[in-house]
Amino acid sequence: MPEKTIRMSPAEYINKKGILKQLPQLLESHGVKNPVVLTDETVYPIIEEYLPDGFLKHYPVEFFGGYCTFEEIERLTKKFQNYDALLAFGGGQLIDTAKVVSDNLTILVFNSQTVPSNCAAITTKSIIYSKEHEKIANIRHKKAVDVVLLEPDILINAPKEYILSGIGDTLAKYYEIRQRITNDKLDSVTSRIGRFFIELCREEMLKITDLEELSEKDLINLFDTIFLVAASVDGISDLDGRSVLAHAFYNAYVKIQPHYKKTHGEAVALGSLFQIIIEGEKSEHLRQEIESYHKAIGLPSTLRELDLTADNELDELADYITRKSDVRVQSVFPDLELNRVRLALEEIRG
Image 1 (tube, one colour):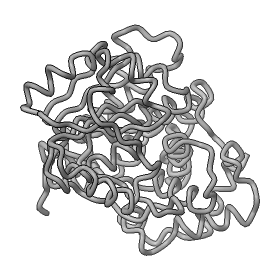
Image 2 (tube, rainbow, N blue to C red):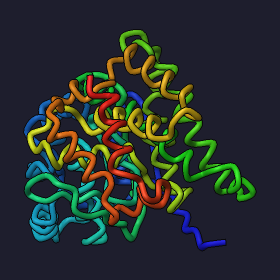
Image 3 (tube, rainbow, N blue to C red):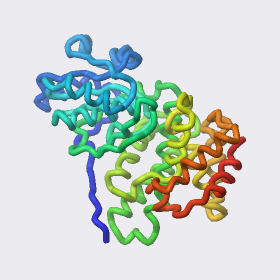
């Protein structure tokens, strides 16, 4: 049996209304004396009311450059050398940047993600982009995230597309990774846990049909699933937790459409449908499930909804998705044919 590395993160996780008001006490309990805040100009006024009075005036604040790039990581690593903790408030790319910077400096990181668009706050890896916004690297961190603090009222009041992003990205855990954690691997306890986690991702997300009619318990479960459960798939499953065609579709999308408008998870959601079509008749029931759910909740079901309609765009998507260098795709769909991909894309053109 190949070696499997289990990564448990975070060390502490709290998803609770009003938790940010307790931040001074949490800093004290961790022995933090000199923290720095990383946020952005959009998030700053939003978090201010959820923090203790004057909190953002009491500690130094640095605004994020906008993208998780090697250049931004280097800039912040140099700037934060004299601090003992990094308090990160923002979206996925800001959080991914904060994790690498805290790892470089071996300081504590407190992540408070302000949009539920993905599980970046928890995972022990960061996705690095080029200045042209193309994914160029995955970085695995040396240490787990120290503390994750989620304020449900901030998350549910995020723009709807970011909530849909979290739902789409979390559902993809099931549609993609069920092809890796297959029945023949379930003699392993950790594989069974991973399989349970991805099935829980599907079950909990499909319960959400009206974002306006969620109880407090529904909110907690929604965000626990998007963040804690989804991220734990990566931690417990190691290589079997890697993405497949849904994320390959997303990577192709952002490469050929640099000024893309859809969120990560919205594009990934369409990628899940694309993967199920590639799988063929055996997965027809899942195709019906996805199409029905996307229509009900507002996730895309066609390329037209992503502003992809031209023949040359579909050709470029197919070329990118079938690259032999994409080990994640090739390990599940070896020798994936260009024509097969092109036909599947045609089915969702819209």
